[in-house]
Image (cartoon, helix red, strand yellow):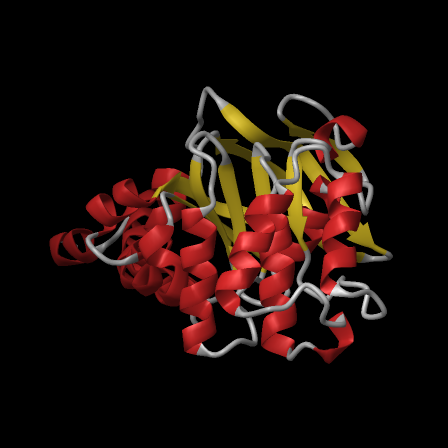
Length: 280
């Protein structure tokens, strides 16, 4: 009888023992999950007092597909901010909402404290991810168009930059190479004296030499207190110029923090962290 009592396990103790066993078995998986997702818990709640761009509970759906879900984001004023994520993560949708080209299904976006409209467009220079130039125009006509449309456009600066590239003012835009069209679009955008520059995939689809020129042009022509909001999935190329990073994952903010803080806490480059977080 004593032997049976010693081996007997009360129901309550059996349940506890079973829970401990399950917890031990799950521990490695949970630890691995925390390891890969630690960046989310440490940085996702970052907040900044002085911001140029803000999202408050933004949602955007395309029919039944949720492109953005409850996006809360504050982008600090000044510096170069990378909006980073794989293709299909919602980057371009967020940018189009910021430019007033789309309307959210919920929440609001603020640029310099205002909702997208004429006032925000007056302080925002936007470079889309597709060719937007008028092919039937000459280069000088496109410059004149920008000069008439944007009061902060510096015509002389733009012409000087084009001269350095060897692009003639009398050239027809349709006769320019694909690379020169992209450079022209960038120079037109960066020749504005804006508070916020939103550049959607400015280095996608161009060769490494052109990428270097584009990034050099961005940094050389950025006004001191302006913010560059650079959207891309090519992290390694832009990491050297970034001061701040935002990870967008499946339409939600996964990270929002200064690049220096990320490197210090994670002990790895932004590109390494990106590959770890977003690997298939």
